[in-house]
Amino acid sequence: MHLPVSVNHDTHTGGSETVMATRIEFTKHGGPDVLHAVDWTPPEPGDNEVQVENKAIGINYIDTYIRSGLYPPPSLPSGLGTEAAGIVAKTGKNVTHFRPGDRVVYAQSSLGAYSSVHNVPEHNLALLPPAISFEQAAASFLKGLTVFYLLRKTYEIKPSEMFLFHAAAGGVGLIACQWAKALGAKLIGTVGSAQKAERAMQAGAWATINYREEDIAGRVRTLTGGKKLPVVYDSVGKDTWESSLDCLQRRGLMVSFGNASGPVTGVNLGILNQKGSLYVTRPSLNGYVTNREELQEASSELFSLIASGVIKVQVEEAQKFALADAAHAHKVLESRQTQGSSLLIP
Image (cartoon, rainbow, N blue to C red; front, side, top):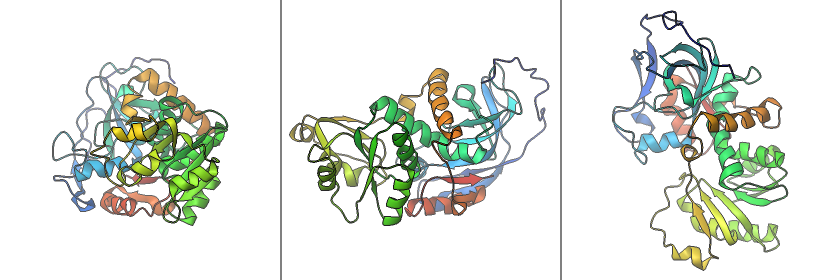
């Protein structure tokens, strides 16, 4: 991390010249087809803001929830996306940690990262080490920060501990498999195909369960000798809620952190009593990384694992899309045919 620097705001890269950019917008909620590429003029960065020229943009499942209206944006028309990596083009007033030309990555910006240029609050930016490429960063930052808070904060996974992680061959799941192996823990991952099972095992899963062919709770009882598990991480939601609870030990923790199959609604709290005085939490990154110090802690641990090769981040060429092809990228993502991360390239 740079020491704080004072920037002469009269000599920013790009000066006051008008910059034309391309961004993805939607004017109504719906399927992928509501996404359209538009030309626009980005505003100058405000106080404590940094203007980033994006080089690679992360596509995340939460983006589909915002587009569909499950998590509606503040207003319409709206941009989309919160994660990208790129180069600092300009800095606003009072910015002390970054200067034009710095390589940076972010995952918690305001909506609008699906753009060639995006203004980001300084406290949401991390300096990108030279050993990590823009594509690696954009493919792993939000997902890696998510795995950090799940495995290190929500419940601190211990060496040799068994736990269940749904969608183990997805973008978050593959990082979780590698991180769990680095911690010496035993991740049991659910997957939807033999190919995805192989991918999860290669990444470091201890065992896999094909939810299309096997009973999840029954297989967990077999793998644990009937003891079941202290914690389950579930990003699937409605379809796996009950089976996830059935995998937990007495007083176990259900971590519900996503809704890929739809939100969990209408829960009768009595079920937690019946199944063993269970705990449930519904966390998000924004509850764990709320300031510069927390971002520094999380990103430092993630970057060290990536730079050392313990966590490998590779994006299939078929999962890199031109920025203007965002609608197609969402169709592919929602088909559940992807493995690992997907990117938009401006």
